[in-house]
Image (cartoon, rainbow, N blue to C red):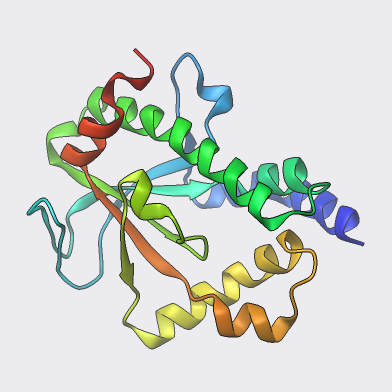
Length: 189
């Protein structure tokens, strides 16, 4: 059943890709990049990151999206949740250098304040340089949870609906452009 649902998702993914205005990170090693990205104007509350970067309403950020259907296909035969987490961690770590390159090469580079993502997979993100921030608006948090729910069901072998709902809440991940450059600038050059 899981393989069937992933096949359907694979078929629908190009439609999702088109309507969300996502792009692939383009550089020499982009086939290894697990992110699809787009510029966005931030619409949440003011956030001050640990390096002093202030992110306010309408600031320009690069929104990062994990390529979930690709991850699900690659991880479908792995039963260990720890092994899955390590693989995802490595993918994200390797892919952030491409995001840094994208920002530095973008014509709006000076206006971009940093990157933002929303995920259920926020454990260990601080080691990658992200700052994890709660989503405070209850309706938006519920909307994001509902949109991530199919991913959570398909990705976890033995997790009950109750455990998914009780243990995982979507969170913002932020990283300033300066911190991204400090950590990942020379990774692909």
